[in-house]
Image 1: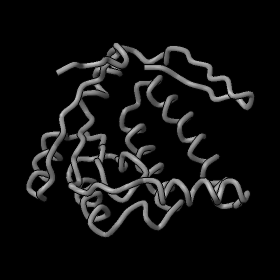
Image 2: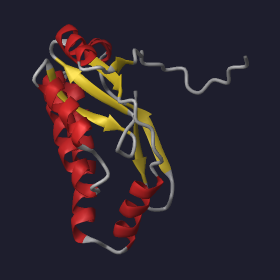
Image 3: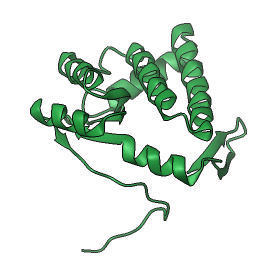
Image 4: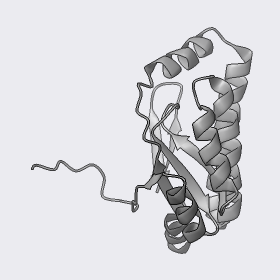
Amino acid sequence: MTCFRFCKDERVEAWPAPISRETRDSLEDSLAMFYTGVTRSASSILKEQNDKTKQDDGEMLKNLHFVKELGERSLDALVRGDLDGFGALMDEHWQHKKKRSGGMSNPQIDEWYSHAMKNGATGGKLIGAGGGGFLLFHAKDKPRLRHAMLEAGMREVRFRFDFEGTKVLIS
């Protein structure tokens, strides 16, 4: 895992995240991702956020700064090995992300999210700009979460962490 700092002079600094292998493996084992079945272009949501940011919209800037702080708190939780705290921060991030745009979520996504939180998830978020794609959850009880989400009609997408970087696959 890598930490990044995006500098005002357009440089990007990177360094290894000081997360133990045990924590990293436990995190990988406690994450579950489900496909919503909804695909859509993220461009309108991203444009809305970008326009508000360029217009110095106070609420948008406050939200983005808060999310940056959440990233720092999330790294701290992982460094300490506090995966339940990391899950709670995922939930906090999702609640703030939804405030950036009305198109970020919808009633079906909110229903699935609530169902996951009642069935073993400690937190989660929609992966992508919003409105569809994948829901990623941290779970204390992954088998219970998996079973509940499959019964709700969602398809799990299994994954593993990869530390080799980008690969070109030729078929």
